[in-house]
Image 1: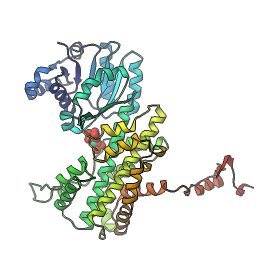
Image 2: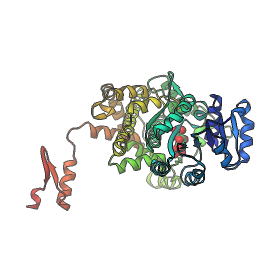
Image 3: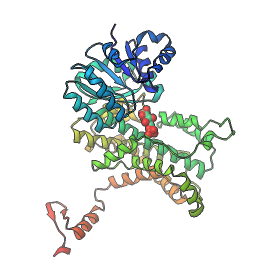
Image 4: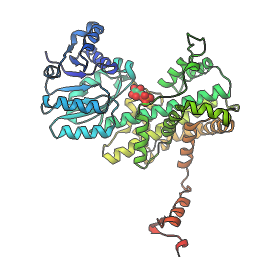
Length: 465
Ligand code: 6PG
């Protein structure tokens, strides 16, 4: 029998998704660039192997698929994807769909969708979140592509997705690059939430001398309340580990230099390109960059001094500050989504995006259910921070965020994400800001002109008379 879907690329994510599909009763054609991986994969598949149909050549892989075909590529993004598109398109027929399930840049996805579209082929950018375990047991998936492709793919993706109270965490979000863009912003929010957690950890560790296992217990307690989220849960867990080699807390032997593969940076680049600023995400990307300059920081500590003052907040104050920061970081992420939706005419459904992030993905959190509700009720100006229940929560939690940032700044603790969130909030809550000074300066040095309050048109100041 012919397979309902093909999976090309049997690395961690590809294998896990193929097994997930097989387990849900789909017949899956599988292949890999290095064909010797295929036998090893099947050997580990156990009973599921009977639904997995191996091919060692691209031609037979394509021929083994029911038409119109659906082929999922799980390979490194960038040049390898272009090479595979080039290799496979001569073998395809009109109506076939090629899917890129990697963390691709959405500009590439848009280009590829246009190129394949010109040949009556369909290209889908599928954001897949949840890591290996998610892919195997239920990821959250963000699909961008044609209605035709969604009709082909939807029934499979709805089965293999994570479910939140019975609702599958997958949606057709828009055409071409929409799915990959939403996944990129998901990762941006992931960066900021991780950074906020790291800053809170650091305040407790270095400002309140709390040992890692106690901080872990605190995160675990928070995971039972309104801060419940996957990232809080794993942080609580990882802080409880001891290094088997040295007997030290495991976090103490891990080098404090963070890696990054690019999606957080893309979020910031796109935000700036669209005249926006996702300052908390930018802070998180920047902090990872600074962290990697470990040698410089070590020298700097001896020259500039590395002493830190006490942090004078309680865990309860930190929890409130965390809640405020988390709301602000989601709010910034959704603003970027709104800007892109307008620029590319995607008509993104923000409530739907929040709904499919409630389970399966890395940023899943209790807050997302409330966010879905808030966007469902059309908040003023489309802004999450202006939705009545969020405005209220912010009003309650902001004093704590102020206290935490003040104490951190006073003690010399770097809190780039927390303070960026606070600065954004304080900028947004004033109907009258300080940009009149910027406009006046621009006019003085460059005759750039300004608008007068309540008057249309371009004006110049008396400094030019
Ligand atoms: C997910 C993750 C996943 C991956 C990121 C990590 O949603 O499952 O976001 O896509 O872990 O790429 O990104 P960095 O390596 O840049 O931290």
